[in-house]
Image 1 (cartoon, rainbow, N blue to C red):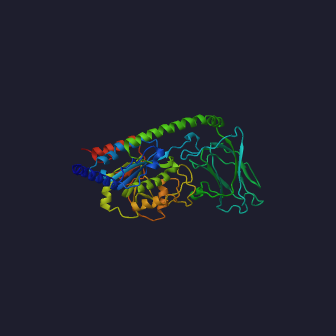
Image 2: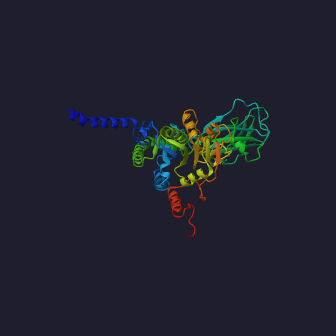
Image 3: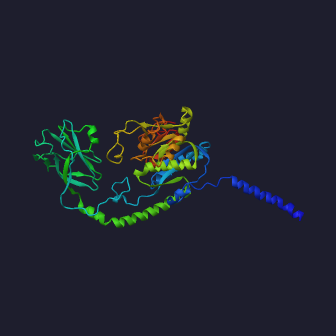
Length: 468
């Protein structure tokens, strides 16, 4: 019996030691991305290895080719680098869900809102009228009055009226009318006033002004001199009048509405196929973070905030670099510049900053909720670096931070609240270009990214190979 106890003791001690080591060790790290819908359940609660820099690459769901080019160029170079490979973590940031509304049926291609047209009125004129209750102040020498309107489908303005009933004298000055459209921001047509009475001016000689999707603004200027000053383009709500319009290409609109159900079925099927492709891509490369947003342009600021939260919850790091999937990035140059310029420390923001950038009220970058005429300083989106404490502040306040039309201007507005130390560096290029020593360059196609990196590998210069 004693012999059996002698034999069993080492086994018992070994099992106890193995159990003790397992209890002290962290659980194995789960993948940073699985199926998009399951992403939130995949956030690990422990810290991984410490990184000097975490790189977040904003990417759209269907930009497979751009991501693969990055994987075969600067990201491949990074993973093969004997020193940097352990110091940098790179993740693509993708919305977990695609928009379930086909692009053809959205109010605009940048959001996920259904174009709400059901029973269009065709082949007849429709009157649109707007008149402020306060019409007693009249026109001053430089008074600007306006009516803003939104167009969900192209229309043709056939008649324009400028209304005024502040006195019984009618208009005493010349009136200039400008129609600013969403994209063109210009008036198309010639105003010839055909009648004037105590109620206002009426013109039908507009040469059928077409207004595209998105909207427009009528600006009315008393004693105008032609082109409006820039500040008038910002506009204020006020007395303007109304217009009569017809729906352009009404038959095409009706046909589009009739084909909407089948288009929706096809679109949902394509979304499922896209989910499957993304799941496979994520399992193969393990470099995607799916964040809990619908992946559209208007939601990019929310994508960024969610990535900040993911980074804080899953990694230990010193700096975070944000870039886009159409950008060339030279991470070796970034590290060299950090070392030579001592670019570190708390409350730190390093980038190429736009100052006094005017707020766009129309088009892709339309911003209607930020009240100031210009944004606070913000860094170009091709690349910027922020310190760890800033990322923690953004992550902890993500639920309270308002998102605006773009992630870069949103970042500038958020940063205005804490006043970080900004380091200006023109080597983060704001426009598509190639300069020696550049840290980043935006707006490249997959082929252009591959060509730029090929030059970088051949000659050390991404812009050209000199005589050898």
